[in-house]
Figure 1 (spheres, one colour):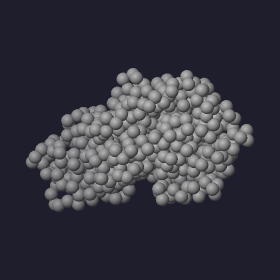
Figure 2: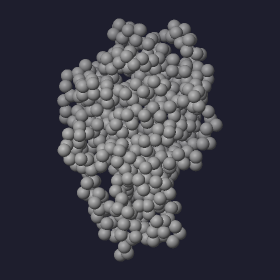
Figure 3: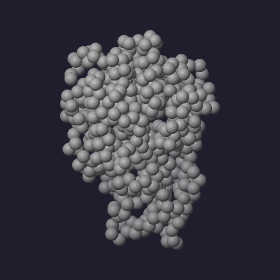
Figure 4: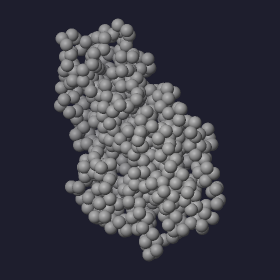
Amino acid sequence: MTAPDIDRLLGEMTLAEKIGQMTQVEKYSISPDEVAGHGIGSVLSGGGGNPTPNTPETWRDMVGSFEEGALRSRLGIPLLYGVDAVHGHNNVYGATIFPHNIGLGATRDADLIRRVARVTAEELIATGVRWDFAPPVSVPQDIRWGRTLEAYSEDTELVTELGVAFLRGLQDVDGTGLANPAAVLGSVKHYVADGGTEWWSAGPDTDQGETTGCNGNFEDAISEERRRTLEQHQNLFGEMYEHGIWGQRIDQGVAKITEEELRAVHLPPYIAAIANGARNIMVSLSSWRDTKMHAHRYLLTDVLKGELGFDGFLVSDWLAIDYLDDDYYTAVTIGINAGVDMVMVPHDWRAFMDSLTRAVEAGDVPMERIDDAVRRILRVKAEMGLFEGVRADSGSVAGFGSTEHRAVAREAVAKSLVLLENNGALPLSKDAGLVYVAGRPAADIGLQCGGWTIEWRGIPGGDIPGTDLLGAVNEAVAEGTEVVFDAAGHFDDRIADVGLVVVAEPPYAEMTGDRADLTLPPEDIELIQRMRSQCRTLIGILYTGRPLLITSQAEAFDALVAAWLPGSEGAGITDALFGDVLFTGKLPFAWPRNDRQIPLAALEADSNSPLWPRGYGLEV
């Protein structure tokens, strides 16, 4: 079926089938037979939504079973399967894991980011997936936000350039567009100003003001019926509920900014993405002023669909509709009327479909709004060739996690490194003599990858295929160099020629990463001091999703490198440390001197300079 047939198809659809197309369900909550019976439009895997065993082949079988179910529905409308592949196809064991976006932002290399997206798309295709909930085009103004690691920069222009590059890498294969079976639909997110929310504007002990829907805390926003649904899934996402939704302080908060600032700082990446082929945009869980974004008809319908001419479809974020009102029927009505086209339910899809059906029958949601939403969804499916049977190319399985893919990731790691300090210590000699390596992260590839790796919040100590830094050092040094590792930095009485100490933020994802205190923990400070006394030259490596407050500790190092969260290919770090490639990375965020320079507005108002400005980076 082609795009001109969409109106005819709409005319054949029942209300239930239309609402089915507007419904996106997480894979644990629905079966292929239920997809067939209800004409469901989309299924997703959230973080950790993996088959067992977790291999490309089992992924392909899982996705294929849901696709086959959709084709068994009365009208055989094909299904879209979506995942969060935010730094490679990060849910799948053996995937190539790239640096998180903050590291990619430090490269300032749009062609590299396009190639990173192409590798990601190829590994998605290998598992049968053709929809990626990426790229994020947030412009964070407060590095305490737990999603800072997902952002390319605090600079709108850089975010726009790299976000477009990633989108084109996913969607545009040799200029053939989305109908190419190697193309993956991107989801530009999260619309809009999610990076402009204020500290203390989210969480249970803050008042977000009077709202169109619910801008208060999540616990008060949901009905008992919805709460029971969430509790049923607590075994799957327990840490999310225990440590996340009730603990965030800025994620899903309120952007209390003028429309002028919203348009100048946060909207340009979306304008550019639409001009470069964006067909799906994900709506933000945050608010602008006193209205949740999913309830914001002005920004969703008037600005995005009207003023900017976006004729793709809008998808909600995870559970976002539940936030809009404590009465679920009202919440659904608000979100759909505001302009949301497809709802990431993600669990209780029967309640969603029933509520929207009743809302249409009661006249609370016009049939014209339903038809507009479904037309947008079907149009994109047609553009992807899904009605003609275009599916992911199974021949790509052999390239999953391949040497060629990992070479791109290794290049990305090397180009992402920002050399913050160097007192003649770098590059290191491969004939260094005695090298001490300390810090658990040096030998922990899970900490090297960070959150959104296999599981939602990552897996410290995880058995993730790739090369950790310790392994990379051992591979890089000359035969006569002795490398000794101790996580706690306890060595014998010898003084090493070189000491490498690696410290890391613990893995986190979105709201669980909201963090008031960006200083190093005491044990890391003690480790640095211990290492300083045991080596002639001390090199510091930081694994972090944002700048940390290290003003006092920076003086201890002869060289200091921001390695961000580099992913699976740690040899990219040693490529630069030992001089095989040059350090070229530049800071995508200003690095504050102290907490009085957070958020960005406070730094810009401070008479003192940051520790290192945005764009800074030594080259050796």
